[in-house]
Length: 402
Ligand SMILES: O=C(O)CCC(=O)C(=O)O
Image (cartoon, rainbow, N blue to C red):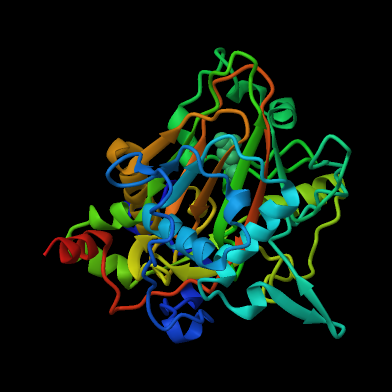
């Protein structure tokens, strides 16, 4: 006989009984920033414009390779990315090595912990970006046409994804497109677990990502399809009522990614248990508890963080399973159904996007049939924290207007 409804409501995941939500403070985050950053204005000389009022900025002409060695401009770029969520550049000549340097510099120049950049192992300094738990090189995924293997680069390849997810691609798909905001891209029947959305934000790591850079070099020959969408976590927070804002600020969520272990077990694949870009990102539990509302140290603004695909397999700590599902569903709705807090980017060859994983969500569009490929680097930031003295994006903009 089915249990009465009240019993169902009281079902609590075992792990939740042990977790007393404790929202991490700024002092515990490892961020080297004492206060949020203000741009020096060094990028104002280049053409750029908002793509929507809420999220997205585009530089139609600037080549990043021209400013890569100018730390002041790269710091201003990081500030702009953190403010606008995602910034787009057209037809870039940046090579993969410089893409990696840029990935490190954005966080390094905006106060990320030393350990998220350089860490010591056996008296040797290692400079690292995030590494996928299923090593790219062991899977033979090359980052260029010469077959170069690099574990710090994720190859985004339609050919590989399509092999395992044929039903998600092209005009024959009958799936709900917005599921990308929360879809499971685990390739459960294959050892080739790729680095798509659910892995990108890597919020299951104790030290998740600050910035990500994706350059798409190969597009479907008819040039259409494969747009990417980003949604603003700042604006999602601002859409909550003051009562729900306070409630969300008191919560933590456990981010969990069980797919790696499942695939490793099923196919005997070896997982990378050593530091994945930061000394804290070790082991094979792929689970971490973080504040649901996160302060971005660069802007000082509050963002919804424990939501959408990042919590696909996770839960809100310390509440019943049903309560967790209700909260998750509402946050997901805010992100997936408010198209005025999203931006949609149509890629051209060699276009590049940089975004701040602390404050945006993103999803791919699987509506194309041709080949599409690019390289992505993901850098690591601070431990997510919530600062009760931080303000929301709308509050910050209101202050500027006054
Ligand atoms: O392929 C895309 O459009 C987005 C790629 C993506 O989801 C990712 O980089 O995680």
